[in-house]
Image 1 (tube, rainbow, N blue to C red):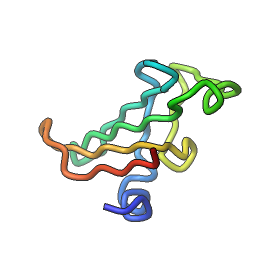
Image 2: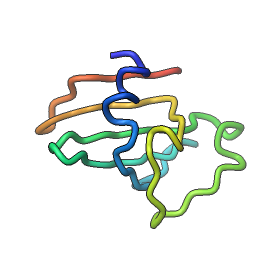
Image 3: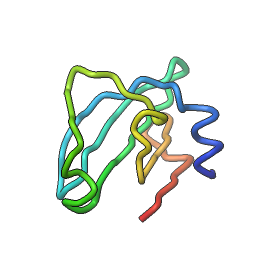
Image 4: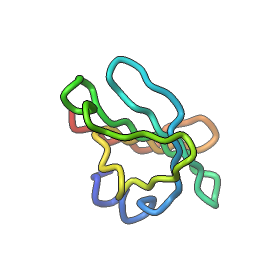
Amino acid sequence: MKKEEILKQYGEVKLKFSSYYKFTFIFHGVSEDGITIVANIGGDSDDIYRMDVDSDKEETLYSLDPNFIDISKDGKSFATWDDY
């Protein structure tokens, strides 16, 4: 799937910060129909240096502008996009 298609379908799903690994912030969310969305931001220190992360704040794909998105249902990925 292209990023534009993912944003059109899942851009407003609420995501929350879930973890940090090797200069990457990872966010998770679940849509009303049970689709799991994982979005990553970062990859190196320059990408995340000034990013403010709050574990209680809800984000969306639109507000995050991630460089990796994975969409899955029942643990099986069916759409992935990355800008690495």
